[in-house]
Image (cartoon, rainbow, N blue to C red; front, side, top):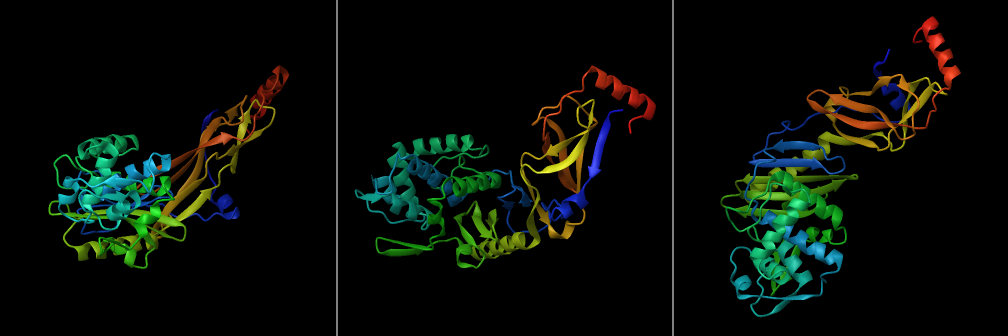
Length: 382
């Protein structure tokens, strides 16, 4: 009789040298003064902390990360060079807020403009880049919105390149995290600009506003933001021991609160959670019984590896099992998905990965099938 077959195999994994720990859902595990918050482990995509992560919010200067993304794409594709010079318009020169202090009717190298945006948060530098690449800031903002949709940022809208307050300028924490991950992964040759702590232009030296760059937490980016409506915000990333976390905070009341919350939450994420590889890509997990096949069992193979981000406090509560209809009827082709690996824990959505047949199994011939059927009638399923 065909039935759901479930085998717990913690012992086998332990014998293979793999450490099993607990999975937890940490979305409400930590209180924060931020109005919106999101902390994600970039290796596994696990959210360690969530507070209104899909709420549209004014991103202020954190939206400049999208401006930089647009420039990085052109550099990578060869449509732009770091040494190209772009003209400074009167609009850019007169722009208020944080400034790089470019001079009207001059030209500035793209690399200097990037540092002006990333390190100095220069609104004027953003407009120079926008006008140089799209003709007008408005056209550039339209391109930003379109490109954001294309890379998965479905809840973002841009009315300008600077993050200047506008009812049509919004992002969600999740979209900012997606953008930060894309910047890190897509542009390793340019990402280092985000870790620079100061930049001098027009004889004015300005420090990077990212407070985590000046603390020993492994931070290497990305961008702060502040307006009266948005409050104080930060999109940041840090790496420790091979783990990279991406954090988005917004709506805090002061620079000091932003710095303290950012450092506290980042330290919490590294301290309370760890990444554990449960399954290696291509690893044989179990052997499934075969019905009317030339062999009695077929190996179940994980085509993709599985690493999970686990709370250390819940490491003993996780359950791992293989689920399939047993026995698996022949014929079977190598690569057929015939089972799944399921990881469960309290208050956590199950994690599932497909398991494939590790080899092909031919069906028995007619006489073999008759013999198997007779054996089943006499001895039963065993």
